[in-house]
Length: 361
Ligand SMILES: [Zn+2]
Ligand SMILES: [Zn+2]
Image (cartoon, rainbow, N blue to C red; front, side, top):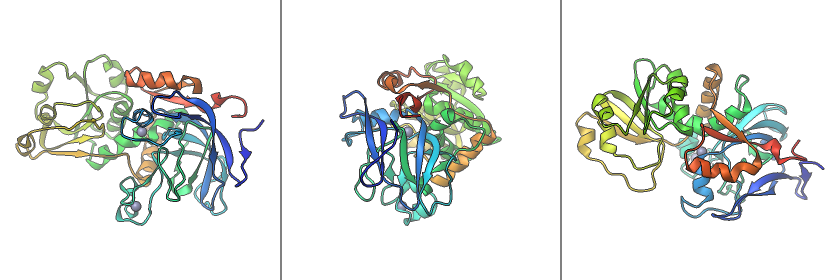
């Protein structure tokens, strides 16, 4: 029995975890992958990270979703086959796929390498439709077919399991840290130390910044320091906000809960910036004076472009960075989702797709 049986259109059937609706558990099933076009890369998926946004989409917490759904946009694997005009990758290369698999390639944002802000709307890796109308299915699967321009190279020196979460969590933190100049002489705070936050600590420290974790409690302080944080403060403790008033150049908020924005803005010094990468569901409110009083800015940031994602992967390889992962089998994904919601993971679940079993070689 083979993993890949050819379909009438020349594509193949991949094993996949499929959910049929917002409250439905995963089933082991299959998904049809297209025949490789001229620039397509067929990837044998080895590991797929579980991102909190998989859960938001799979449970329709962000509005109506497309079912059946195969989530997963933190994909690491090996090239199995390439289309006739592929030049960037060869069979056997270690590669990754992140949150989108295509974009218009013509708008000013795409041309600038900011495909994640494509004006036509980039094509999400799952829970979306390609420009030809075909639904997209993500990484909780044994293979995927993606245009080479939306595939990343995973350098030697980063194992595939710890590389997978870099494709979303890693770039989500790298992009704002890079954009707002985290580096030597800069005081950077990361709010929250979960899947996103722990990567923020590692990357900000490797960039040379002075790194502080702002977490509800100090329960993960030992880990935070091991990941490179220089300081660790509990936000439950009111004295934290007095002690650190006006202290930071940059604060990156990875938490999706509602925060008292004014209190955090008060931690920024002159020209400091608070960047949101965790997106709360409700409205946020703050006083304009919290910004004006010290020429502060508040901003948001969403993943990163293809070029920047490759830069992040190369940076992580150079500095020996990967995610802290708990590798699980395909049968553990439902429980893993519940544990992510309970913040009971240190720090990212990664699905080992070899556990699809027979045929998944
Ligand atoms: Zn994600
Ligand atoms: Zn575009």
